[in-house]
Image (cartoon, rainbow over all chains, first blue to last red; front, top):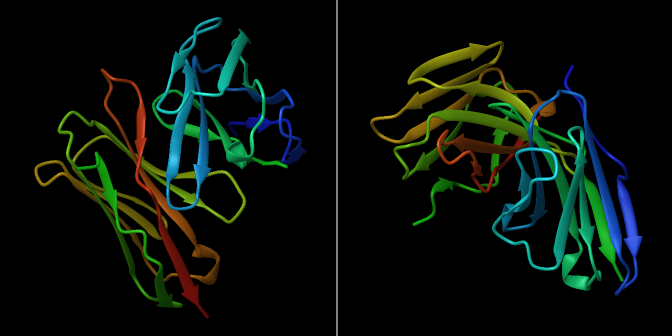
Length: 109
Length: 111
């Protein structure tokens, strides 16, 4: 079974903190993605990566950065967390079809 | 016009009913089509994947693609309460290489 694992299911962070969300896949896929999902807004693409050390901005990259040092690991970084970044964050890895992690529900207080 | 449109529901049906979930799209370059099921507070789970017009069946689930009408459907036969979830359609244009998701349809199957 394919596996995408996100490091945390639930996180609570304070405004201004630097936050790291980690994602690991065991499928040897080159393509990895970070989305956030909010009620009424659906899935919105933050960043994606086609290869190690490569990154591309998605539709809503402001306030986020990413790191892909190894093929299997794709990290999302919130440089200075704000309350409007409270959301469900989903990592995905893709060949043709995309497989998702279980999600991280982040609350910024 | 959004690239992918999907009725958000909520859709409520009695157990055993046939459910039809639909998406329309505007980009004729989409070549791959997927359906995901997402339970509350969980990540989306891939249900069906197809790249051609026509039907693809997997157990109680049938995915249908009509590229000429830019319309895809997911049918669920003999629906069960465990099918209660949000269903997202997704599409991929190979040259563009990004997956575009519909907003999801919330389904409740009432025992």
